[in-house]
Structure formats: C-alpha cells, structure tokens
Amino acid sequence: MTVIINGSSATLPGDPRVSLLDFLREHLHLSGTKKGCDQGACGACTVLVDGERILSCLALAVQFDGRQVTTIEGLSDDAGLHPLQQAFIEHDGFQCGYCTPGQICSAIGMAAEAKRGLPSHVSADLTAEVTLTREEMQERMSGNLCRCGAHNGIIDAIRETVVAGMAA
Amino acid sequence: MTPFSFTRATDPDEALRLFEGNASYLGGGTNLVDLMRETIARPERLVDVTALSDTIEETADGGLLIGAAVRNTALAEHLGVRTRYPVLARAILAGASAQIRNMATVGGNLLQRTRCLYFYDHAGSRCNKRAPGSGCDAVHGFNRNHAILGASPLCVATHPSDMCVALAALDATVHLTGAGGARTLPFTALHRLPGEHPEIDTVLEPGELITAIELPPLPFAANSTYRKVRDRASYAFALVSVAAALEIEGGQIRDVRIALGGVAHKPWRATTAEAALRGGPATEAAFRDAAITELADAKPLSDNGFKVELVTRTLAAVLSELAGAAA
Ligand SMILES: Cc1cc2nc3c(=O)[nH]c(=O)nc-3n(C[C@H](O)[C@H](O)[C@H](O)COP(=O)(O)OP(=O)(O)OC[C@H]3O[C@@H](n4cnc5c(N)ncnc54)[C@H](O)[C@@H]3O)c2cc1C
Ligand code: FES
Ligand code: FES
Image (cartoon, rainbow over all chains, first blue to last red; front, side):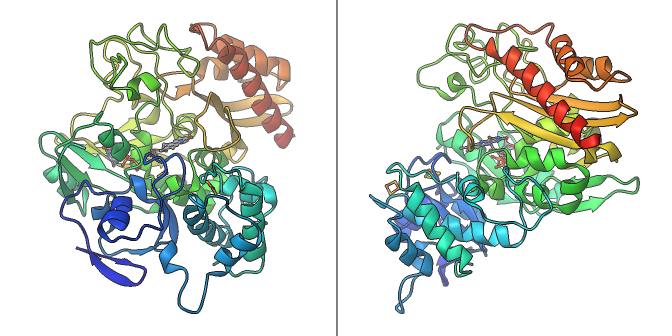
C-alpha cells in the first residue's frame, strides 16, 4: 500500500492506528504539518488530498492508499516560495507560525472550492458564482484557528493571492 | 487507541461479510477516530466503507438517491440539492468546517455521537451513554447545551448533526442492508429517544449498514432554509437550529415542514407545530404560537431554559423569512 506525498511514493504504515498526521511527521519527518489539538478543532494539521483540504489528525493513514497528498513542504521548490507563502510574509499573516502551514494548505483548497462554485454558510444565493468577499473568506477559513490572532493579515494575504489567481 | 485490524469493502455485501464481532464501519473517521483515540470507542475491526456508493442519482418519482459514502461537501454542492432542497445544502454548510465536510460521509454524519462533555470526559464523569448504569452527570451538571424535549432521567444528551435536522424535515428515507436483508426506514424513525437505553442511539441492528438516503420529491422545499444559533458565528455546534420548508397559497399556509436541532436526543420533527400551522394564516403571531404549542412539553434543565424562547424566536424568524420569500 503506497501513497504519493509531494510527488514521491511512500509505503503506508503497517499499524492502522497511525494517523496521516503522525505518518507525515513521525514516519516521514515532514514536520511542516502541525499538530494543534489532534481532535479536529484547530486546522493546524490541514493538508491537501487530491487537491481537497482535509484534517490529517482525524485521518487514518491506511485510508489513503493510492491517493496524492500535498503538504506545506510540497508547495515550494528550489525556484522559491509559493506565491501564498510570499504573501503571508508580506502581509504579516503569522506571528508564531504554528498555524501557518495549515492556513496555507487550507487557503489553496478554499480557492479551488470557490472557483468551482461551492457556496458557503454566508452565501446569500446558493447557486451564484462565488465572490470571495472578506466575509466569505472568513467563513470559509473558519476551520483554521490562529492563537496569535493574525487573521487580518492571513485574509489579506489570501485575498491578494487568490484575487490574482495564483493560489489554485 | 486500542489495536484493531483494518479492511476496506468495495461493495455492501463485502462490507457485511467483513463486519464480524466487535467491529465498526469507518466513513471519513472524523467522529470515530476521535472517539477511538479517547478510548470511548474500542472496535477490534474497522471496515472502511468509503469506497461504497458515492453517487447522487435522480429517482423515478423525481427525488434523489444519495449514496452513503457521498461526502458532506459533495452533497451540499450538488445543484439539485441547492435548488430543490436548499435547507439541506444550508444545514450541511452550517456544520463543522470545510476540511471536516470534505472528509465526512453521509452515513457517518447520521451516526455521529453526541457532543455532551460528560460523554467525552471518560476519566472524570459518569455517563449512561458511555457506561450504561454509571449515572448521568449532565442532569444536575453544566447542561446549557442539553435537551429540552424527549429526554429521560438517564440521559439529556442532544444529537449534534445539522444535516440530520434537514433530513428530518424533508421526509427522507434511510436505505439499510444487514444480515436480515435490505430494508428502508423513515428518517425520523432512525434515531431513538434515550428512554431506558441511552447507550443505543438508533434502531439499527448490530452490523447493519446504511447504503443510501432517499429524498422524496417535495416541490415546495425549493422554499426552504436552515438557521443555526450558536455561541460563535462559525465552526461551533448548534445551541438550537431550525430546518423548515413553507408553501403559501393566497396568504394561507398550504403545507409546511419543520424540524428542530439542539433540543433532543434525535433531530426533532415538529409535527405539532406543522399541524397547528397547516391551513392557517402565515403571520409571525401564528408562527410563534405554533412554536409554543410544539414546546408545551419542554422540560428545561437548570442551565438551558433559554432554549425555549430561542427556539420560539428562531422558528418564527425562519418561517417569516420563508413567508416573505413566497409572497
Ligand atoms: C471539531 C468538529 C466540529 C464539528 N462540528 C459539527 C457541526 O457543527 N455540525 C455537525 O453536524 N457536525 C459537526 N461535526 C461532526 C461531523 O459532522 C461528523 O464527525 C461527521 O459527519 C461524521 O462523518 P464521518 O464519515 O467522518 O463518520 P465516521 O467518524 O467515519 O463514523 C461515524 C459513525 O458512523 C458509522 N458509520 C459510518 N458510515 C456508516 C455506514 N455507511 N453504515 C453504518 N454505519 C456507518 C461509524 O461506524 C461510526 O460509528 C464536527 C466534528 C468535529 C471534529
Ligand atoms: S491538529 Fe488536526 S485539527 Fe487540530
Ligand atoms: S501565527 Fe501563531 S497560531 Fe497563528
């Protein structure tokens, strides 16, 4: 059983108790993805699976046979940072940085959802094209908490990048 | 976590075959993995059912058949759901977070367990749902989030799902398969009230598998919505919620569907309020009176008396909104 992590194949753990989060951090030493609560309440562990944002802490690694996982480590390359990472720096989108990998992966997933027209809890019209207002972004990013309160910078960074169409 | 074996089923028959002894089906894992980590759930075998039907199909009579493995996001995103059953799309979008909705399956959402803090606190609290016969620390404890309808002295927990409140309002049907063959159940008959056995959430037989949810055609559900009241604006469970659909003709209520969340051990179909409203005027006063009638038997606990007025106001506000949209 193998999973593709940031483009490289990895053998899934034999013990089914291992969460995708522990598999990434402890087995593969990809410690960019963070463990905040380990119970689905903070979003620090957000990764992308086949382009969709999920919580790796509530996911058993064995469920991801044959899937493509992207973590924060997979977003940048030798050529430089992902535009969203750069925007987080420019807009002070973090203080301690603990929530940041989850915020960035989540925002990339969010951009794709908005692009394909998925409405949110605050969308007045469930079938209209999505306009990512500040209120829409706040609602769509509510699964990612920031204890440092960097939310304004986070939203600014996402707005700049998503509006420029670079995040997806 | 207690050790367990893991297998993956590719069809319902295989799932039933793999389910042996102390086993559990596994959907997105967003509730079960958490409960296993807390050792509140201790299955020895997990049967992954996420490879089962994840399609949403039109039925011959104009309804929708939703596979149990459909993810919550996919259900809210489906255009037929958004246009014909907006209450369902809105209820799903009001629940959890985007990441959790991407993982959660329809089957798992139905069978998620209560969020009562005493149920979760296995180290320090008594809970008849977690440990039958141990007692209930919520009845005289911190019970702000607990039930006002249909509770028993043994358990005052509420069902936490938003999606299920919409399904209760929409007259959905649950498709099941088990050792005794396939059967269907009205959605409102799936979850139980706690009574003498709060440890049992539903009427499912051990090992019985949810295969699909069916929505009947309900044209007036195009005028439906969901409102959730909670302590923060997003990513929080409901204090109370209302799912409703309303049909008005010549200023009179022709038909109405109402279900309440956050008030009982199961999604609460408000049949008393519906009966009071049908054929009557679509006025705010009538909406309030219907809510009061529905809540006549409410038994608030020490901390949750506010829910009676909160449900009344929320229900009146939701129906007024729908009446405005229908006018
Ligand atoms: C932080 C947090 C916040 C949340 N907030 C909300 C909220 O505001 N509103 C809300 O409604 N929900 C909320 N949820 C709950 C979430 O909606 C549920 O955890 C989710 O719907 C469960 O689906 P799943 O597929 O992950 O289920 P799993 O965890 O995989 O399974 C749950 C149960 O269903 C059983 N099961 C799964 N599929 C089947 C099947 N086909 N047949 C029979 N049994 C089956 C499993 O055996 C298990 O007992 C929240 C969860 C978290 C972690
Ligand atoms: S660590 Fe996964 S949500 Fe907090
Ligand atoms: S930057 Fe510290 S938690 Fe967000």
